[in-house]
Length: 450
View 1 (cartoon, rainbow, N blue to C red):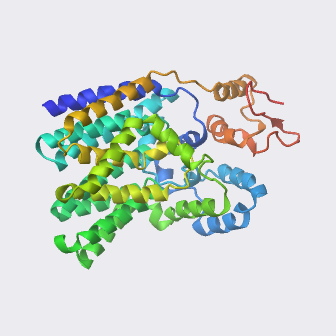
View 2 (view 1 turned 90 degrees about the vertical axis):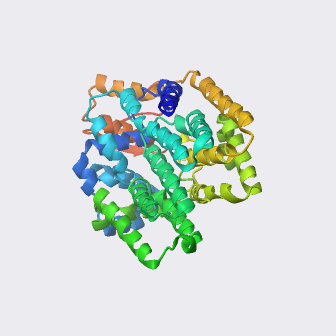
View 3 (view 1 turned 180 degrees about the vertical axis):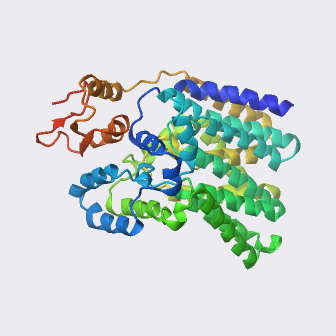
């Protein structure tokens, strides 16, 4: 009963910290594309129809993707084809299976974002009960409370935009708890459960290969103690394949999963700063300043871990996962909270397990409380709304441009296309629109259309 009460208090605190910061803004950038993909329906996302065949995708990308002058025309052409994989940004469809029914409820932008907070709420539950499951008695309770408080007060959990990263965080948290349970006891059912979760992550984001590699490394480390065999490896492959086939069949029979990896390779080879242009130290400076005590707890836990021996080392799967994920996302040069979701929740769990199985619990509990107080302080700050997106949409409606041809900044294309799918849009990346006979939307605010 006390755990139910504790979880309800944590849930109330989390919603207080996060829900009031949910933006009422129109869907822009990635959100607009995800919502448009959701509007195409379950069948389109389950079967990836319509989408460009992989061979044509490679041929078109190789012929036109390297030429900066043809990229905008190529993007415009793909948007006109309603390629559902393109609108998912080449990710798997699992997140869309949750977003589709929510998007059909007729809710406002703020309400849709608020409903989708159910995913980080489930992550909170997974962290709390996962710590209790992994560590018995009072130490497990301390770890559960600490891990939950670190998670809800950190900047990563504060991401409220529509994106699959929260779902990936939920899956990876469950994966790590089950993998640690397997490493500790050698129960093969836990191994197979971890394989299924790795497959679900594969159907969510391309960086799921980190879970697969983590699974392989941990399996290799304990292979003799738990009796892993080549037969078990074959069964794991079949189970992974079968899970993907059920959740995302087009990944297999259309090879849709290849598009995500090919597109990432294209961005890495032919685009400068494809995932942001902030400096490395600037990004990490912001992350630390946004949640200083959270990162202090993580650093302290690492020091204690490498100075300890024996049982505390059972948490090494988290370190393997976090290290691999940090390497995999090294070129993501942006401090947006959603990218921290790929590794920070795992490090929060690691800190809780490392710190609260040590004798210094009172001091560390005070640190966790201070983390929450900092989170409350951040939540009380006023969030400035960008007036430009709603002004653009209102201008188009008031001037009845819904079916007109319009030249717009490329960053505005996803938003305008989602709200006015019958418009004909031509994106531009220069400071000013190219001279043509089309009506042009200028950058900046107030909105100017000529």
